[in-house]
Image 1 (cartoon, rainbow, N blue to C red):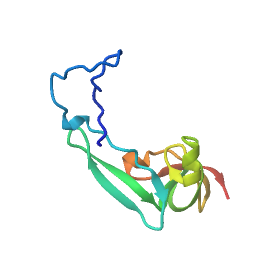
Image 2: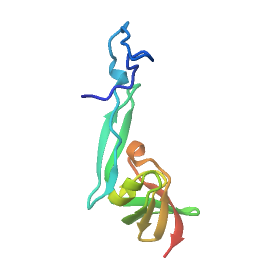
Image 3: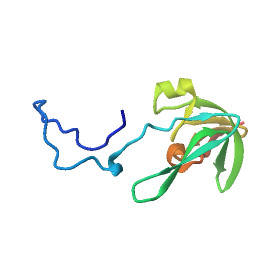
Length: 127
């Protein structure tokens, strides 16, 4: 069964409403992309409403870590913590706000890997 983001055609009483039109392609949804650490990077291109494309990062290896005005591309060693969901911390899912362990030290992810296709982070604790 697909994911539909339109009206569910149910009244507050639980009764069924009649639709005045059919479902549209623009109303389909998708499951969240759970970016994980891997030995090689993998991205997919998804067409979105308006004809634009979102590049979704499925597997990550590198992050762009900013230290003041200097930014370096470094290897991600592990996912330390993810405040978005407790389950994601255990599974090592990288999302915005996650704390990752890099070659330079601990960094906080500032980009949205599932929407941007890249991991940008700010160094919060150096080695």
